[in-house]
Length: 47
Image (tube, rainbow, N blue to C red; front, side):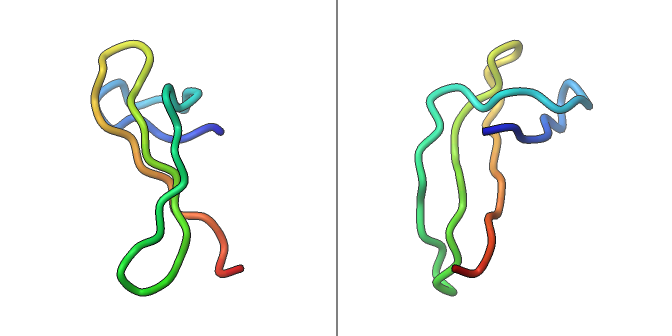
């Protein structure tokens, strides 16, 4: 899964990506940046 790293200001593959469900019921992917180790978060579709 690819996400945007705010620190590197670039799109990268999310390391250790895990699917989580947010409070509002939407699904998201959570992991870390492979370069700098900053937390990355990508919101997925409604389904």
